[in-house]
Length: 203
Length: 203
Image: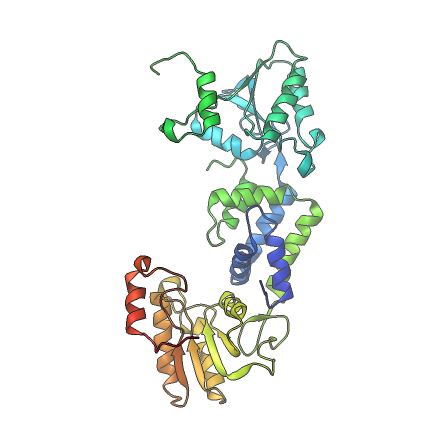
């Protein structure tokens, strides 16, 4: 792209570092910011700097929270003996939306990915082990993505948890989505759904 | 979406005001900003505030430019008697990329759209008429989008230009795109391409 202004080009380059944003989309965003009223723009930038400087993480589950301990971790209605390990806050929100989970969470902040320079110490794995070590946890559910990085992280956490034989390590069920046609399902998922078949029930 | 932090929710709401960005995408951008190094984040926000506070518009064509008169308007190689009227800077970049146009531009900054609160005085139409009035312009090419708003703006500008009978008002050719199949072309475009047929030439 031949952007006729260096200042604009610089802003476009910065915006294009956001995930999934190319130069053309970045230009669209930049021009939209440029067309904003001064007050709107100040409020836009202000919300970003506030996010960066003032947001906290829950000291227990490491989810973003405005309070030192997040509402889920401080709720007496939740089952604190079950911990669901997820990659990011989006997964917490997705699982919460189902209304099917009453346990608590542990947000890793990513998965082990040497290519992206994300190692064990960049994640909250040590904090997870401390939580388990402190006692009171009966089950750890691994709900990481089914990628090579997610699987590696699953295996690593599972090995570390062997130290606590009383803790059950489970993973969420993978299989054909409700309403999906077997004919169009991918082979790996269909294969796994047959291997991991469960007793039939009418629920 | 049940975002567990007000600070994050506020940032997501602000980011979702960008064109084509929904809450889910905004959350993705917000978390990506949150994961940035402090230096990266400062450079990101800095580029936006610099864009907002320091970018200038060319005094002639109203395109974004780092200099008072943009490189196109100040070039002696361009034909300053032909002015192409476009909605935004993106169209200038698209036409420049073709390498087929040697004239100059006039960026309106939008099209007349009462529903969006954009009236004649929000656009650079008066400045266009001043340029024509100053003399030296032989042709004005209208290259606005083929929407109701674009057509309204075309008609308004054309009427205003009637005051200058020596100035030819043209519009870019609309028709079947090169390589497109007639069978799949929309009826309006195909109909117009037959009505506006041109003498055959081998070029």
